Image (tube, rainbow, N blue to C red):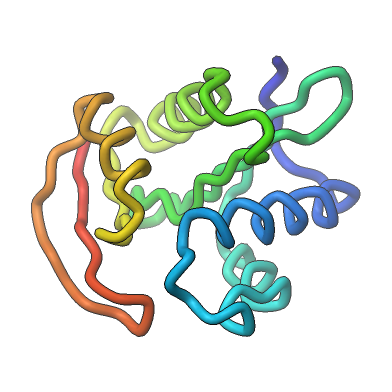
Length: 138
């Protein structure tokens, strides 16, 4: 697996991963809420890294470096539990100087468990149009 900063040519693959992973992660959202244009707009001021295997984009992480905030972490659902998410999260932490925050929807239990198992701790809670979320800090 290779991690590298994203390039314009990666946008379509990243969008496809987002669409597939978000539908699994957020099954309570109506399909029209999971949109490619919303995802692409969310990346505008963020640093994005991808994971590649044999030249194929298999995951991504986006970071808002100014706030040391990890905004998005998505892995191709066919590749879950293969260490890709862990590698991308570790890269994001390196880029943030070893300390960062992120928000995770409470309903995405698998993701919440993933973060807690890696040492992230809940530090706040809130509500969005997608439902309740937890703020985690590392």
